[in-house]
Amino acid sequence: MHLSRRLAMTAMLSIACVTGYAQERATREEAKAMTDAAFEHIKKVGEAQAYKDFTTDKAKWNKKDLYVQVYNNNSINQAHGANPQLVGKDMTNVRDANGVNLVPDMIKMAAKGGGWVDYDWPDPITKKIMGKSTYVRKQPNGEGFVGVGVYR
Picture 1 (cartoon, rainbow, N blue to C red):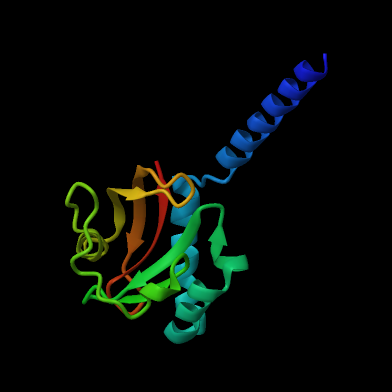
Picture 2: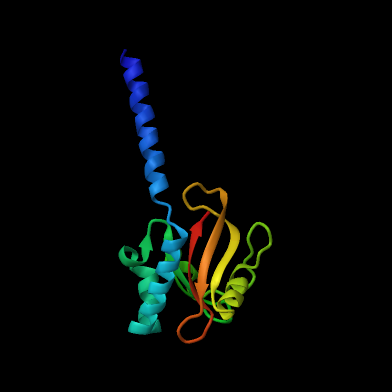
């Protein structure tokens, strides 16, 4: 009987972990809403403060598995909520597992009025390559893009 209780407890904890994991995933609507909020934040506080906020203010700008990223027209990272070491880096040649040229493709999409860019990227939780979609729109200054991605 003691063993069956232990197995039941293990099963319940596993279900709780999976449920918690599923709840941490954001939706496309949430990614688009955060992109729009980031755009408005840039307009309100200016580029320098907004870029700093996106990169360092995890309480406000990191929700579930969402974070803000900002690039200029030269594919130079201006802000990155998940990896501050990318700020200032040229990401022109970064490609996904299928050869999608991520940042230049996102800049092109933003220049067309904004929208979704699909690609495959390592999931920070599972470390497996997964489908990801990032919603991008041109920054208020007309440069590059501001965007937020969601795993599919």
